Image (cartoon, rainbow, N blue to C red):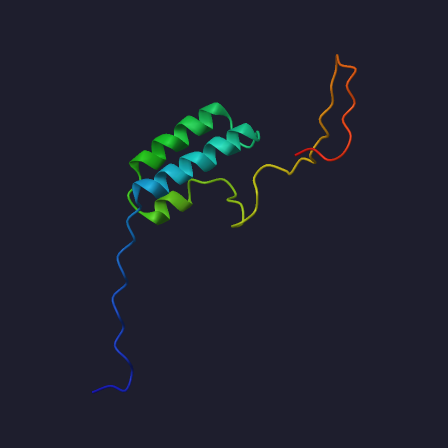
Length: 95
């Protein structure tokens, strides 16, 4: 007998769920809105998403996935409400 541990067979690839596929499509849709993908690239990649079976196949489809917890849309400072055609002047804080 050898003192070397037996090598474990590699684990089978993890299958992707429908929710994971939907998340990738949503990410691709955001990438189109941000101008990182053209509509043609989007269409091609969505076809690949729906044809994919494993998580590994989904990972190669996404363009530069954002870090977890990072908002994909920059934060916009809140604006104060103002009346355009009114003589009323609001005083105090808005409810």
